[in-house]
Image (tube, rainbow, N blue to C red; front, side, top):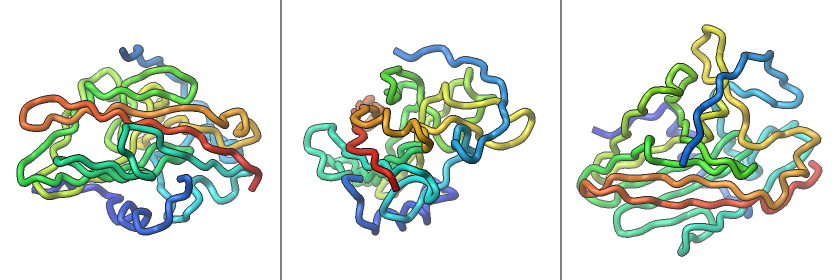
Length: 216
């Protein structure tokens, strides 16, 4: 059966818009500070935008991104004979949609996947169903049935915050949306997504760079 994702309609929208130049470490235990809406230091889940410019509309700076890997990537699209990917990096996370091009199931192996944060640190990968209570648990693989699509977002597992008993997925954004934003120009980041294809692991190394940070 196709994998159900609660925000798949949003992904289908952003794919239609013009995309602009658009070893793990042990997770630390974070306290739960009060969210700061102005500085956007903590976010609840991830809400993708269908606008051509990623990020919060009231942020003082605008990020623009470029995808630099793997070889053969065209804009924010990459495909091989088995899978087709569409990406939309943003300040909160990296959004993606993948299509299984063959008539047999594949799996995303979250435990083997690796995130490369903008500061150069490597970490395990968190996605839409990863919560603070899951940070020390093995994440189950996600199945993508034959000829089906799956949408999700990813960010470093260590960015998760304790929601203090709520059911929210609180986490630090991938990139700040405040007056420190210009410091992140030219920063590299990315994710190695590991797929199990025909019972064999296959690493897809997706790399991005902050192409520019400009005042809104």
